[in-house]
Each structure stands twice: as C-alpha cells, then as structure tokens.
Image 1 (tube, rainbow, N blue to C red):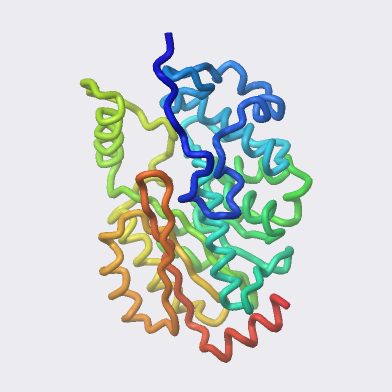
Image 2: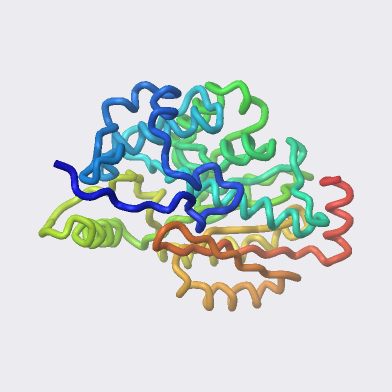
Length: 321
C-alpha cells in the first residue's frame, strides 16, 4: 500500500525559465521516446511513477530518454563508469551562459553556428555541446584528456546528424595546459564552458557519496559507489576544483584577445574568495558571478573577460549581429 501522496510543486521555479525540465518528468512521453526506459519506471512509495535514482543503469536510461524526447538526439551512450550528468542542471548552465552573452549583445541571445564555444573537459557524454547546439544552434570544440572519453564523444557526434560538423573533439595532451594546444592559430571562441573536477582525491569522492547515501537512506551504510559514475579525471584532480579553476584563470590571460567570456562552474561558494584574488592578479576587465540553484544545491558560474568595453562592442557587432 502506498503512502499518502506527496505534494510536488507544479513548476520547479528554481530552474531557469527556459529550462525544459521545470515540470515533473512525463514518463509516458519519455517511454514513448525511449522504450528501454520502461523496465526502470515503477511506482514509488507514494504511488508516483519514478525510477530508482540510486541505480546507475536507471539514471543512464533516463538521460537517454530525456535527450531523445526533448533534444531530438538519436544516439547517446557512455562507456561503463563514466560520468552520467544530470540533464536539468546542465541545461540550466547553458541557459545562464546564453543570458551572459545576451548582456553583451543588447539583451539578445546570439544564436547560430557562428557562435563558437569551447567545452573544457567535455567528457564521454558530450552533454554541453549537445544542449548548446540543440537549444541555440551554437557550434563547439570539446577538449578531453581521456582517450576513451574522446572516442565516446566522437561516436555521439557521428551518431547524430544535427551535431555533425557542429561539434569537434580535440585531445589535450597535457592536462595542465588547458587552453594551449586546443586553441588553433587565429581561432576565436565566444565563450568557454567547464564543469571542473570537484574533488581532490578518490577517497574524498567516496566519503562524500557515503555521507549523502546515509542521509538519504536513513540507515547504516558502509560502502557505496556513486550512482552518477565518473572516472578519476572527471571527478577529482590534485587540488580539486579550486586548483583547476585557478589554473584556468592564470592560463586564460595568454588567450585574452581570442575569447570573449571565460567561464567555469564553481560548486563550492567557499572557493570564490580565493578565485577572486587569482583573478585580481590577472587583471580582467570584468568579472561576473551567476548563481544557479537546483533543489538544495547552489552553484556559481564564474565568468571573466579581458576585452575592454570598446573591444566587447566591436566583437558583438562583428560576430553576433
């Protein structure tokens, strides 16, 4: 017997107004788009249709269905143990980035394939280029340091006619370079986007996930693997998020005239003060912090540009209008 129905808000108002996932998942529509989701959809303890979000296979099947139903993606898959991103959160990131570009373009979002983004560490899932192109027509270069992730992303691009010739995957041979070796000669980007490795070690990943599982399950758990997957280079690096974004800041100065907005996701607000100090050392002309909220979690998009107001105006008029 199911428990009394849990009341859910009709609209997830914390998500961006243009986010396609502000309403509850329509499982009938999702199953129609991707029948493979059927085996994972069952009534929960409240009698509502749902999936087991602690089951990595179920989360992956949900992602496939969301991409097919809402973004017309014909093929999407990732190898075992690679990061399976939350689609609503990644979509929010893309929409807030579009708003950032609009602020520099008279309030109008620049669209079309002439708008070029660089996804730093695109992963095996290629999620940012998928969402950015399907929502706004942008083209992308995705950098990646893992060979298997690169092959997976290339397969996703090849498997979707709408992405062919709009998304290019490039291997970064030196993880600490970030931009070096990815920017081509005389190549420009309108923005960078990055969801950096958050943790400082594998042990930190497992401890944090174990803590969350104990809080959610309300019982004693001694071992648990993340339901969203994630290889070591996707989830952690030396120094974690703060070190990675700091490296981005320092190296971005070398490409100050060939990218309008450098941006990175910052999941821990406590890191912002240190990152602001790093930015002050590099002397960008403008720094912005954009807050995003999903459920109980709040993240920030940290954005900076080295272009003067006059250069920004010339850039927008030449490329975006």
